[in-house]
Amino acid sequence: MGVGGRLAVVLAFTFADGVITEIDVIGDRDRLSAADLSVLPQTSEV
Figure 1 (cartoon, rainbow, N blue to C red):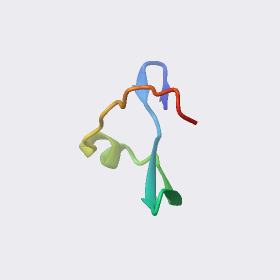
Figure 2 (spheres, rainbow, N blue to C red):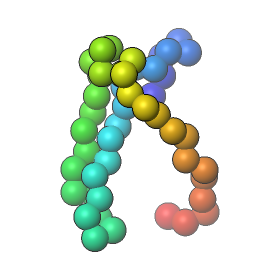
Figure 3 (cartoon, rainbow, N blue to C red):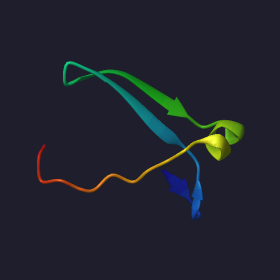
Figure 4 (cartoon, one colour):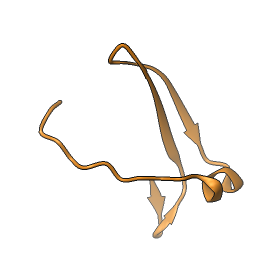
């Protein structure tokens, strides 16, 4: 999630057996600058 064109927060999801088991909200600037991020393609599945 970005604010003013800058990354502000990352949501990190952990999955087990197809179910979200953990959600981490990362807002620390040092951790964000070190993060290796990818944008996933949008799918029509919900």
